[in-house]
Image 1 (cartoon, rainbow, N blue to C red):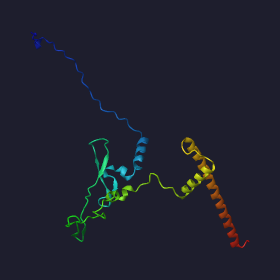
Image 2: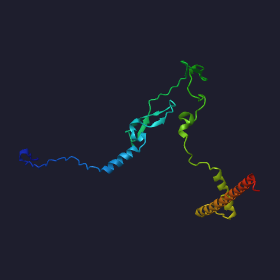
Image 3: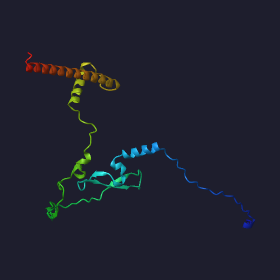
Image 4: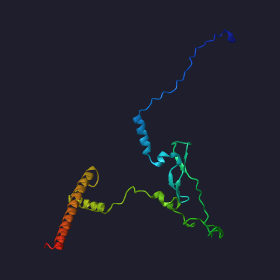
Length: 214
C-alpha cells in the first residue's frame, strides 16, 4: 500500500517576486529641419493622398457617373488591403416620363420589364458590355509599331539578308540582328539627311527666284 503524505509535512518554498516597474516611453524631440521637411512632404502629396478617408475617385459602372467611393478595410484573410465600395444600386427597369417600359418575352410570350441597357437579352453579352469598356482602356502589352518602326523592321530584314547571315536562332543570331539593325538605322538616317538637303536646296532656289536674284 502507498503511504499517505500529509500536506503539513511538505515545506512551502516561497520565491521572492520582484515588482516590475513600467517606465514611460521616451520620445526624442525632432529637430526643426526634420519637422519642416515632413510638413513639406505632406504638402506635396495629392488631394487623395492627404485625405485617404474620403476614398478613391472612381468612374462608377453602375450609375455611369464619376464620384468618390467609401473605403472599407478587409480583415478576413490576407493580404489586408483596402477595397472601395459604393452605395449606387443598379436599376433594371426603363422608366420614361414616369411610365415603366415593358417588352415581350420571346420564350414565355408575356410582358417583362425592359432592361435599361443596349444588350440584347437573346444573346450572350460581351465582357465589355458587362463591366464597361473603360476597364480595358489601357496601354497594349505589345503595342503596334508605327510607320517609322515598320520601315526600320523592313530595312533590318533586308540588310540581314544582304550581309549573308544564315543563323536565325540562338545568341549568335541576336548579335547578327543587332548588327543588321544598327546598319539599317545608319542607312535610314543618311537617306533622311539627303532628303532634307534636297528640300533645303530647293527652298533656297525658289526664294532666290522670288527675289529676282536669278
